[in-house]
Amino acid sequence: MLEVRGLTRAFGGLKAVDGVDLDVPEGAIVGLIGPNGAGKTTCFAAIAGFVKPDAGSVRFAGADVTGREPHVVARAGMVRTFQITQPFARLSVRENVMVGAWLRHARRAEAEAAAERVARAVGMGAMLDMRAGDLTVAGRKRLELARALATSPRLLLLDEVMAGLNPTEVAEIVGVVRSIRDGGVTILLIEHVMQAVVSLAEQVHVLNQGRIIARGTPAAIVADPAVVEAYLGHGAAARLAGGGGGG
Amino acid sequence: MSARARLLLALGAVAALALPLVLPSNYAVNVAVMILFSAFLGQAWNIAGGFAGQTSFGHVVFFGTGAYASTILHATWGWNPWLAWPMAALAGGAVGLGIGALAFRAGLRGSYFALVTLAFAEVFRILANSAEFTRGGLGILIKADARAANFQFRDPAWFYYVALALVAASLAIAWWLRRSRFGAQLAAIRENEDAARALGIDVLRAKTLCMGISGAMAGAGGTFYAQKYLYIDPTIAFGVEKSVEMLLVSMIGGAGTVFGPLVGAVALGFVGEATRALTSAQGLGLVVYGIILVAIVARLPDGLIGLFARRAARRGGRDA
Picture 1 (tube, each protein chain N blue to C red):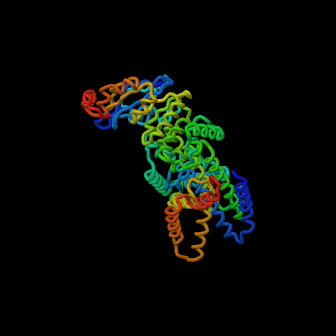
Picture 2: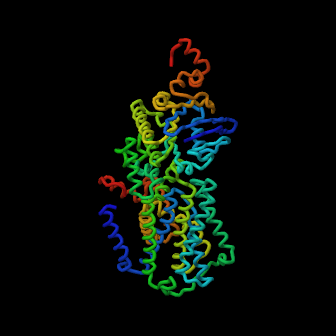
Picture 3: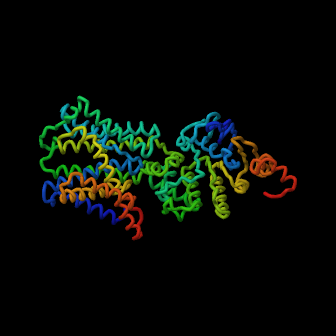
């Protein structure tokens, strides 16, 4: 479904994303994790067309979409959400989700029905008439998800939809994401919350300082010394293995 | 639309149609004409500035382009003004598309966009002042020949009905924008461009198109003005006053709402007449407008319409 090869993007002298290869097979939930500043969001932005990559290629559903405008990418069926939520603050939840739904529905009644269906699916059925600007953090995260989902995407790029949520809310969103996948949508998710990724993703890629340092199943990733060091600092893996405890 | 809203709208329409019959003098009818005209131009601004959030300080450039286009066709080339009218809308729309494409392609937003539109209006004013075919600073006089076939009326009530038709058409466009996919795209762009792009909206195209529609409306307004006063010059056609007026009626009434510009135009019309009746001091009207604008921006960000909407919300209704 998604094939990223050698994706590179530098800001000034800093290579935020440096030769990233990434594959997302159709129907999968794939995780992209890494410590703060690892380049996850830039990687997403470069895939979805929000920043032009300096090098590398992005193929989506067999077509080359490298450096294409975000709306072109979205219409092709690859839609991202934002880590820092970007609600249409003065519009209602219904109107927000309808903006997504309008992409595939030409008539108002259809767009409205589709928006309400999606809102219910992500648990926002009771909030349809609320102003998006009045939502809680958890509500805004759900709204990001609902709007993107309303465009009927084939691949969803979810950027930290669980950050800032309490454990109950995380558990709810995990359920929602899983049901979205079961509805036939492929998912690539960035997550800082390791536990969420481990419970959701079948395949995990670990990004550190712009490079992929490990990939594999969640179980293999948590045990990988390189990953532990990336998160906890140099030498941490050895200390942990030596029985120091912690974590 | 609720039954109550429909009834209000029907009553309003009947009252508007009957108004010239009950107004005491031609002066009063002319005031009503200018209020309606102001509401129409305000709606043109509102399409871009309110619905799409692209605040322009130079919307007069479309008005002036339309005024010159039809007046040159009519006075210089001998076209019938009714035929020249759609050309004015086309010219205004073309300039709207052009300025929109240039400014938005350059990534101008917010106050930068506002300043660039202001600059365009000034450039057009200077060009009109120096060009041969606009007859420079002398302006263009339309020969008085009061026949309806000539888009000139002896009885101002006919101008009133033409202006009323313009306002009705502009309200229909605004209503369509509230309901349509294109309108939803503009609202999304106004609220958050990045999110709009992420959801598949071609932001550049939508904004440019919106400037084209807005420009065409203002251009059509230019012909109306020229035919009413039978004279235009660079200052009338491209002066900053009209830009400010368009922005004022829309913001005071409620930018981004269907009836905002009409409400704003009526309110400002009454204020204008009141200040004129109370004092002969030049420019006092503008001072009062300014004070009202400051008060509105500070206390009522949704304009006068926001007052009604808030009361409706208290009664338990939704979506004014």
